Length: 259
Ligand code: 1JT
Image (cartoon, rainbow, N blue to C red; front, side, top):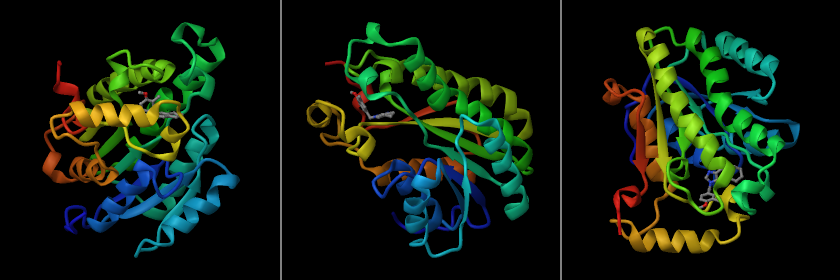
């Protein structure tokens, strides 16, 4: 991405960097290039090393915190760590989702209660949990962002329980925006087109999906993680100061096409 000073003097935290292909990592590089000071979280000790290695390639020193979003104590500890290291923050980027593999392969009606609740907890409720933690740290207002996918509003083959979780996530974006707006906190989602990240790769038929989307999308190609990062930098910057509660599509236009 082109370097700008759009985020000079701003501080923020990115949740969900897993590896170098992660959308969260492209966003982190975009934020860093734009001059932001960053903190990161990792889910557990097993994943810490990979995040550390990636973060060490950024030019500035960054803080790293453990945060399994299913544990309220870890979310609270993240808030304390950010307060200690940064005092206040300007943005939070939520790039977390989970569903069990079998729930993304069987018919939707086969979804178990356990699988449904787990997808909701990690992929949807966690946005509310981290927003509650972040709001008191956003002393000059702020930008909270999450990632979603078109499967929230269309029945997309195999997306299944994640589609239901993303529908709840997008609704949460609107309710959080309405709740936190008076504090100057904006809450938005980026709906990315399908991208060949490691999370997506194991899904049967994913390569087919990429091909079909590229054929039908107005721009006749798939979207790249750097393009999602561009929208994310915009949403963290003052350029988007009038935008809240929105779902912004970064999908080469796929969502607008009928036939
Ligand atoms: C998860 C996974 C959330 C893959 C995801 C996701 N959000 C988008 N993708 C990629 C994707 C997946 C399917 C799809 C289109 C895009 C993996 C498990 C953790 C949560 O179907 C058309 C299935």
